[in-house]
Image (cartoon, rainbow, N blue to C red; front, side):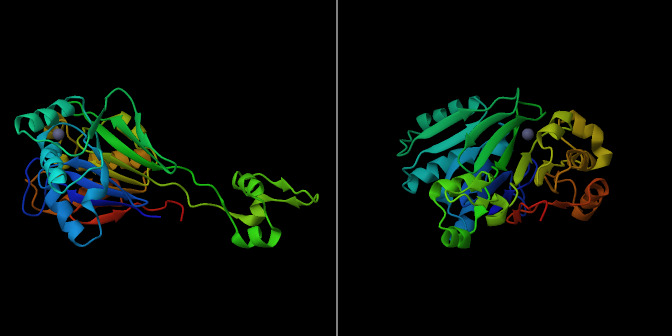
Length: 312
Ligand SMILES: [Zn+2]
């Protein structure tokens, strides 16, 4: 089952020709979620839509980490474009409490009459919070440490049930109630008195995967706790190690600090982004990250990264 992250933008404050400001499209089991919406997000989405790989209109949930412009200034444009494209399905937007007022004010002064509903859900920076779930997936916000109120986001698959072999269902004539019991890993005593071990007819499901998004944040132990054991972590690394003082001053992280979070949290794979435009040599940046955490790479705009199964 699909679980991947397309980086639409991963620049720090300044967009460039190669890097847009922050946005990611997350596809989990063909459900699409947008995380942050920097300037240029809808153009990046349209590039993907033209390939029919991603359908921009199928995004029903947008998560905004904080209200620095490089993380949300694309949102008024996206809301407007959805209206022009004839959207009628509601759009749920999760973010800091002030976001709703900003967006509603914009619509009001521009005289926009939306043909679809915007539902705002406020995030908070006290503790981890469940924002949304369905039968297979749950999405949380968690506090990070930045100059203004900011959260990260955690996407987690739920545990799947074991699958019962089709052959067993057919050959043994299993009843629906028996199948339900087997899926709960319970052995059966059938009506004719025979015993049936669940493990003899079931296959273990793939382990659940998880992905955490952390931008922007300075190094903080609570982030380590929040992303503990995730299969893939996106963490900002705005500065190289020799600019550590600058990182502290601006509430950002260095390459080595991003690697330290990944190492201490025992994550499967680390993607770093939000690199300062002052660094022209990505290889030097990557070398520092890999020094602290080997399974790391630098995020690139337009690239899709699959969240791996840890134990397969
Ligand atoms: Zn910021």
